[in-house]
Length: 284
Image (cartoon, rainbow, N blue to C red; front, side, top):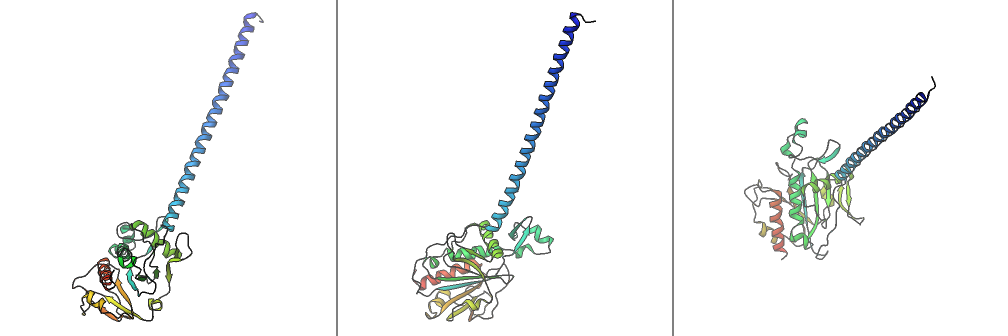
């Protein structure tokens, strides 16, 4: 019963059990560590996704920074004012973010709401503003102010020394920020470069302003260069141009309603002609 062979066999069985228990406990700890690592990695991925969503939403609302640029010329010189009417700038919540609606990116969204995507053309006002702010007239300091009224009736002012975004996406981000926050200040300054103001626009125009509306449908056809050159030096010229895809500006509160071409012109083309005529007037 208690021979030497039995003793050796019991010792071997005891060592074997200890080895199995050690291996079992080690594998259990490794599995727990692997599960813990997987949980940590999953949490890190979820946190990164949340941070990315927050940053994307912030970028959509914040838009690009606005930078003031230097303007040459004397403040005593007579300037010109532009009023851009019926600009299609409407903010909509698409997914989780607020965006300026346009016919290219949001056609399905607009059709679901029984709207015509062809009416949503914020690119028109973007091109029109670039035509103004890129002109030698503006760089010479002759631009006094730009006022934009949206199709929904929101009126805002753009200072003449704003550096307008070059790309359409950045422009839409800027307009989305403006229409939600109602004003935008320059980087490193407290001055409001873009600011939503109260209607009507006539309350913000100088007393000596002469308001001139342009439309190809006007019966009064003029040579724009001659018309501008012969304009009185004592009055501030205010040009009212439509920034919509279809339609016509309101004739009310205008001193002149003229046509500069028998064919319809885009807002940007019309503004280029106006700036060119004024540059000849002021020898710029």
